[in-house]
Image (cartoon, rainbow, N blue to C red; front, side, top):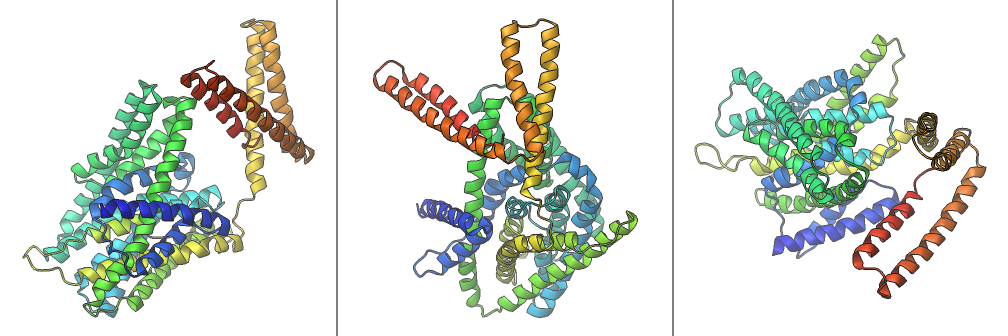
Length: 519
């Protein structure tokens, strides 16, 4: 019962924080971590310990799946080389550097220090996606940062498993490393492809919105469990399934189902992100209190580890960016590498790895320095989300990488104009074929021509149309309110039933919602 109360309390807290974050124009994940820490410090608040299987199995798959669906396949192909260098080389360098620093400043064994390094070596797709949604970054930069966080999982998991084996069993086999990496990455990709293929076949034969929603919600769990049961990377499987299904989504669903899936996924992602980022902050005071009993220092080592991660990332990204600029005949710049370096937040995936560290060795004794490793990892995650989360947007603005809102509006207007022109061309073909009565053709032609004229005005930057559209939205909403009142009068008078009421109200709501979209 206490667990249910904590989850409900976190949802309420997250809702309040989300509203505050929008008004303060700060990233909600960072504010949630701060709020969780403050709540955890309140006297009388029960100690919170999160089972690792809850994070890795329940929370992680849908969040990673949502981040993968946002990935642009076209942009991913354009940045795959730097992504590969970051997802493999940078992870190895970060793990080695953090392990060396941790061993030097904490006195823990080199195996446990290396284990801490592998936990924190990779950036987190959930944190990066959550922080990146509010930033208007150029598409290439956004794809680079997000793709790196999605595909560096296989490297970090391999290092993590080898480090756990060395710490728990006292053994290390370099010969098995290549095979395990192939199984993690290749097996995960294969499992994701199989899951996506099966789900696509099922969804093609399903038109029920409820069933479609259930299938969509179960897809990330199916891909994750399939990969994990084969001892492959579940996160990689979820990413591959998300990218494949995201590309094929228009062919698998209709408009009504897409609207419903968008609403459901938005709610699920909000709840899961809210709970998990709040838990990161809420669990930290509990871990620190337990560590105090052993009188081990954690704050200075945590700050040094954070500094090490940032320094290694800067030392890796800037030369890579300069090399790419030199090969492309361009002058090296600081803006993009600075943002990419600072965008490497840690979050849910490192937290799940830290919590999953075994309690005992194979000999049955307690695993030395485990509590210190977990506390350091959680501290680094919290510091990363708070410091980098609050300062990333100012850095993006200082680097002048923010995509202007006018650019997005112009792209939207261009797309609408081209679509309307395509519709007009098709309509003229149908008119020549006499495929419909002339009165129908004329009514459609008037609507299409109106869309074309508005699109041309938008592309020309006509300010007068904004006032006209504002008046149109205001008056149309007034009419919708009158229609809604009449609809409920008919229902209250017994002239229409519940089913008709809900269906017509849904149509009115869709029309009202459509008024908020750019025209």
